[in-house]
Length: 181
Image (cartoon, rainbow, N blue to C red; front, side, top):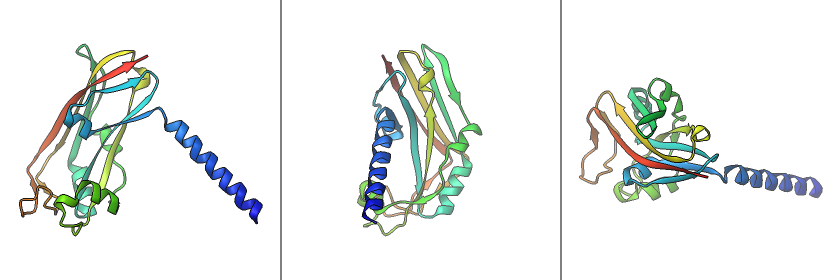
């Protein structure tokens, strides 16, 4: 029994180490990076993923948002498109809806969520970027998220004492993506 437990622990340690090595050259670019205008530098051959999330007080509201949204992602070099993706292709990159962990809520929303009394469900949108096909150089990465009708999220995330409403609209932004040798 002890021998099997030791073997299991060794196997789990090896799997964890392998995962860490595999992810060592993986970069995650978030909408926070884009909203902050943060340039991103990636070594040629590294993998990169662009990700953002949408949250609301119920899984149904998150589902409705993901259904009515459209995402566009574009990478250009000297004004020439190197990569372009838009809906419906990009709709496949939404994750299943999940309940936000208490840690996620504490980190992101406790300041506007009255000590986490509003439940939070969310879905991530994650798309691997084609960085393996990009040569060394400077690129512009542009992202746009649009939704086709007004929506709510059941929270008061802006702290004005009323439930937040989002009119039909969108968010967008861009950053410089530097590929280095």
